[in-house]
Length: 457
Image (cartoon, one colour):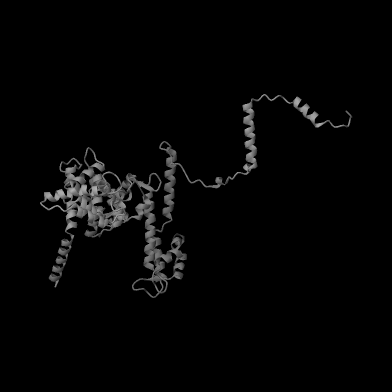
């Protein structure tokens, strides 16, 4: 070979192969390596080197609650929540700031006066917002003004209505913070024990409850708490959202007891008043003839006018929580709330569950007949001629107008606004008698009214 002649590529390849160590890998290893290389090159070819990592920018939204044995984390969580609630509380208007706001609004009223109401226009409204301070800024927006704008020919709003709006908002936030202090889990809801603690500590601040014996406190708290849970926890989860407590009127009724001059009529109609709580507990004690603190079916049968059917009471003791076949005070409260509020969906749900013996989700003709037969038997015992079931059945279906002409669902009862009448017909002889003689009762009421008018003249 000439000195300047280049070696052939095949000779170079042979020499390299001869020098390289022999590959002693098994077929399986070679196949695995080949698959790995293929996957790597294919991923690179598809753009795998530039993966979308935008998920890393999503902020963390789930924080695990500390376990029971993580004492330090639990304490840290409690302290941080307490600090947060204190900060929120400081952001609210205090009495002095509310008074100052009222003076500013009164100073900026715009004539003419609408009747006896002082009015303010949008320009003056914004001026007050600038002078009232940073805490008031959220109340002085175009949205709030538009909400309160009605039919004033000058485009003004009532100063009193606006001030009441601000007061209501401040009260709601104060109450939410107050309730949140009892939210042990920090999840925006109260358990039964949390609400019991809240109401127990609230009692000394309610002048209308000053006369309650301390020995009665536990029964009062139980009575008050049951109303919240009966109506706001229909699925019986054992907890209520704080938001739901604020949205309903129950808290207003409870805090109404701060009024030292609350009328007797208002107290009697308020479930949370001392007379009402004592009435319910007194009824329970009167029914408990053997004084064992529980009610048997026979004892409960004397409830109200003692005209609830035996068949219905059987279903109460089958479905409701009992202890050795007897009912405690808490279960009794649910029973009372259902029967005293039969127009309410939660009460209808309670009674419907008792009527729906086979848990089908609807009442058919057989179910209606089964319960009404007990009414017919009671009528015979009282020496009355039993009413035909066919007539009653037709009237019930005419009242409810269910979607399915052969089945009545809970929603049908609620939508018809006749649920209280229908359930009374099926479970209570007195309720059925009232319905059957409704025209006579109306006529008697009219006669009484006419007689009273004549006496007045």
